Image (cartoon, rainbow, N blue to C red; front, top):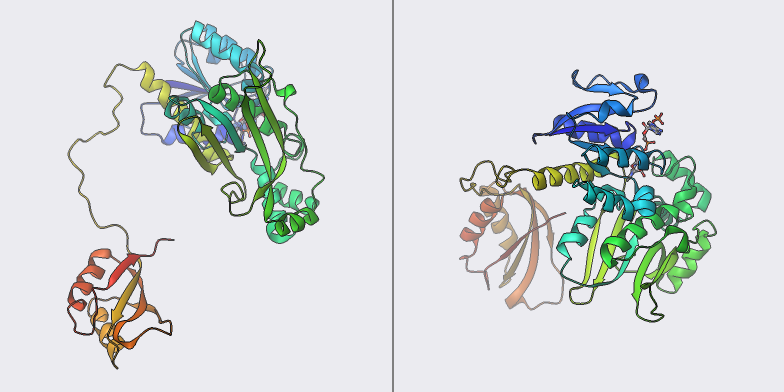
Length: 420
Ligand SMILES: NC(=O)c1ccc[n+]([C@@H]2O[C@H](COP(=O)([O-])OP(=O)(O)OC[C@H]3O[C@@H](n4cnc5c(N)ncnc54)[C@H](OP(=O)(O)O)[C@@H]3O)[C@@H](O)[C@H]2O)c1
């Protein structure tokens, strides 16, 4: 399957890398960008064609177009041209999908081609597919999201290190989490576009971005976090859309907004930190379902794009051609990686128990990290804990099989892996 790439910026370069390294039956054939000569990189296979002419990519050889240029125009025009030429398209363009998604999806269906837009919402989190397919059986009532990594990064930095708004913004820009012009992120327009896309696929309503009220996070200061904490809350930029039964008229009614809001500390949304994203759906039957992960960045976004490309290949290839498992022989299950362990003993106390245990463990090359014993327990059934440095589970189990019958044990010692 031949893929042409429109746009060779942050996401485009990550997509190209994934395509070049992919073991799937995919071939990158064209890279389209304005003033393309300055974009060339030495790691690109020599048969990939670099071009600044759209006509070059609308050739029969190309099966799928990946659009990672952004903006409404001319991207929308290119998508229409691609559909007319019988090509499926995968895009990361949230503004285009929020403003023209309904029409573009209809047009793609008319031309019997696919339009994938997983990467347009929450970067690497496969929330579009999860809602469209995994939750298709439910009637979603509400979608709440932390959809903008820049705002979340800044708010969590203001919260954790008492940074001022300006210092948090400067740091976000230095670390590549915020654009030079952060208006779309800070004032909610980026999250609003994503919310409109989620409303379409999750609540099945066509929501116009301009109709969704946005409030900026710009007025917030560290003082707001002090007071929010005192009340048991923190602050996150929340995007919300909820189906409304009231006010029924010819068109469906929803409540929708993008704004900074207080969320209870200890809640799932308060736990979303840094540039992470989170989408929470509430369904009539299935209740609450959450999706979290990296919401932006070249590589996570490129993963979403490649997944869309592969989904199209799977849908359009003959049954059985696209195989998940190349080798159907059952895989051998082997012990997992070594990890630290927690061992809990309950013993009839007497001198020398720790020394005996240390010797027995050492015979298996197991190294003690710490010994913990709380006071206040009876000597006839005294619990204490030994933690071990990283070791394989089967070695720990073998050592405990030898230790368990020793007469000071009141019960068989318990062993748990410590997973960080
Ligand atoms: N970055 C992320 O983390 C992320 C996450 C999710 C979705 N997205 C979406 O992915 C898309 C691309 O984002 P990005 O961060 O990769 O942007 P970017 O780094 O600015 O890349 C855009 C590329 O398109 C080229 N381009 C712009 N206008 C063009 C035109 N009229 N004709 C031909 N080429 C043009 C640019 O060329 P120049 O070098 O000349 O500017 C650049 O190479 C956007 O829709 C964005 O919303 C991005």
